[in-house]
Image 1 (cartoon, each protein chain N blue to C red):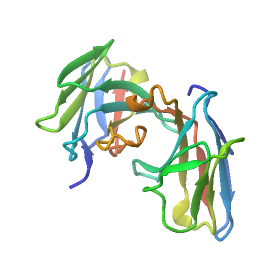
Image 2: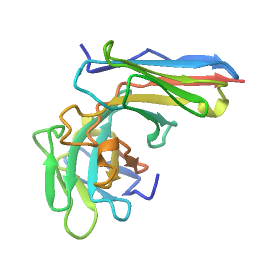
Image 3: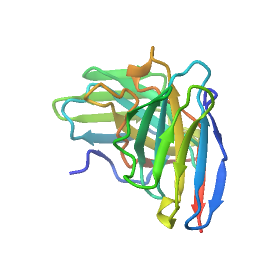
Image 4: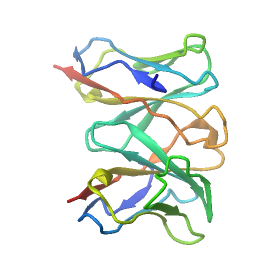
Length: 114
Length: 116
């Protein structure tokens, strides 16, 4: 079983729609979860972090976490063409000794078409 | 990218040569991480360094790869006797102690190594 699995892509949605990105992880000890966005040929940038079960909203982005199911998702409302990118899910290190040691999923490629 | 500077941005090497990748973290950041992104694969952790110390190198290949973060100067990722399988994008990220537990890494633009 892979440590972090993301829904296979690419995912294509029309402009204005909701894009749903899913991620499951194997390490039950993970306490923090991060979503990074990576444009083609660019570096990853953090767009959302979540630590508690439930929803966390930030503008058009909503992260949802269910630790019992070891599942985290990212919803993008009113999708825009500028949201077209690869989205990387990354649980934090459960050991807590290497804070920036993240295990990234393979990524889901999102394309928002006009 | 909050000021993490990596160079060179693109590097071409022939098999057997050495590659040196440099990373200057954001000013004031004392924690540096190197990640590798192979074609069609996700980002993989390689090594975590603080000034003059390697904290976690569990993601480094056992041979040919080394990393340092000296008291003065940039962090260096060194790959000796490169092979074609080393062709990848190498990203450096930095953070401060204060935010180290947030997972908020500031990535540089990466160094793209091509081995012929």
